[in-house]
Image (cartoon, rainbow, N blue to C red; front, side, top):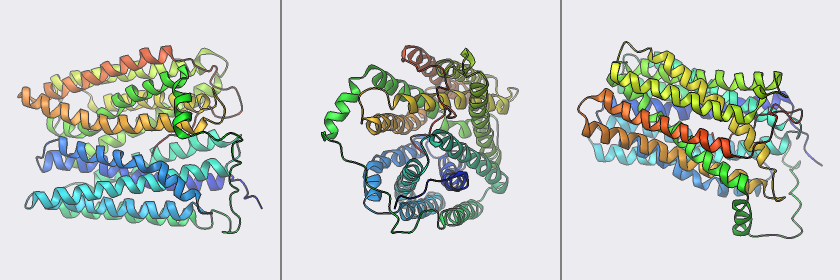
Length: 444
């Protein structure tokens, strides 16, 4: 018996799980980073390396997806991944209290914690997206993926805002309590959302029909890389996501050092950024739906325009590094988030369409190639941004101009991304079918 397809109630439940996953991740990649750099006076390269490590570990995603394919249910993999993610978050948080007195032990525990975070995100996130793809009707799949993605962004914003208020005044005990609360809540929401979501164990998802002419992975990858659109889009994803992610780990330390933000205020700033991302994504969805047949619905327009707008907002942060407190930092960060959200959701929409372009039965290879480019860019971007920040501080005594150099470099990367987007063969208009024109993200 074939399993029934998911309706919107089941899709929203999966979105709640994705939001819970994102809530833990944003606490680790934003708040813990600021604590290490500002409160503990550690080099920014340390949290940058830890976040890069959690992306590197996610190279195991294909293997985890294969493991879940061997069983009849994805739920155990999602729950197990969330449990590992929560345990890793608690370990990473506790490590900060050890780094002052026993730095080696603290760094060892932090490393183990971020390895667990990467494994947990890979196991839970991959199985969740596979479940979504296999159990949602094709006509509804893109819209469903968009809803789940937006719920994750909402989880980012709510967690960053709430944690920011609860962290002031900062203490290691308070940080541990906040992390414990977020992890416990995330696990509870996951268990409730997944309760009886899948059909009975006997109602298995049928195995896909084997290809009449099986090919090796190396051959399939070579075929995809020969396709101009796939190859150019891979380069665009890498450069744009490198620019997108390079500021993640230095924004909160920048706010604390140059603008005097407290840990709670800088964490709330991350919430402002994610709120901007959400608004940017919604603008693309609404405008694209209303003007699907016109230039306003063009994916190419939104990719190029979003990259240019992102470059402009990063130029604003460059100025902020020189002028300091008079600059409207929160407004600048919100606009940067909106620009990032606009270009990224347009890129995701194009990704879903390009996945089916070219040789048949290579859709998974294309999506995997672009997902790998995104993961490498995110890991390398965080590491590069923090390393550049440390180097700039070593060369320049004043913190503001040092951060300004890094933001300016990121702005240049976004200009390069816009030029690359102009060269990519685009499918116009945004809406060729009844879907929302947006697709699921490759990563959490």
